[in-house]
Amino acid sequence: MHKFIITLLLSSLLVPLIAQTYQIKRDIKYILPSDTSVYRQEQCKLDLYFPEKTKGFKTLVWFHGGGLTGGEKEIPVQLKGHGFAVVGVNYRLFPRGKNPDYTIDAAEAVAWVFKHISEYGGDAGKIYVAGHSAGGYLTSMLLLDKSYLGKFGIDADSVRGYFPISGQCATHYTIRTERRIPFNVPLVDKYAPLNNVRKIGTQLVLITADRKLEQMGRYEENLYLKAVLEGIGNREIPLYELAGFNHGEVAEPACLLIDKLIK
Image (cartoon, rainbow, N blue to C red):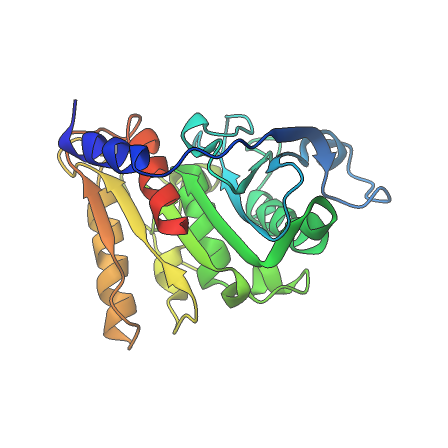
């Protein structure tokens, strides 16, 4: 077993066990009932996992991976039972959804959490956002292009922390596919986190798999994003490279790391 996992598991054992029960509410629509899009009414739902009889808890919004073409909302098991809520989000997918439908949906889901988490006992001032792969891309876009959350009345910097895992920092390859641009042709335009760098007023932690095992250029894109953000005057942006894990495997140890960062 990897040393990283062993360290996190041992540190978890030092935390006293607390008898706490959790509830899950499934398939909550985060869009308005008046929305006329059949696909949005079908797809734009979230699952809310939260501690019962608890007030002021933190909440992590989680975006699944799948290349913006597949995947399903999920509550990662590594994030369960740790005293905070987790929100698993479905969003529109290509080809039925077109860019930037999925990013708009992601923003509306986060806005729903801001507006409704207090109804379940959560603190709207303690919301975090994370996701793996495509979900990592969405996480970075919501932070760096403030227009998405701003459309729903939320300041992107009011999120307490963003934790993209193995997210593309150039324009996502599915967006390139939609435009019939080859997978291996890099593009950095308004739909790239790298093209939206700014002075940020919240926490950003970048996480990738082992650079030798990651998808093509994924670690390097995140390293470049770190360099550019710091170059324009941001404080140091941590970049965790989880040695020994490939792109598909990295979400599990990354969730253990995120658990520690939230606490």
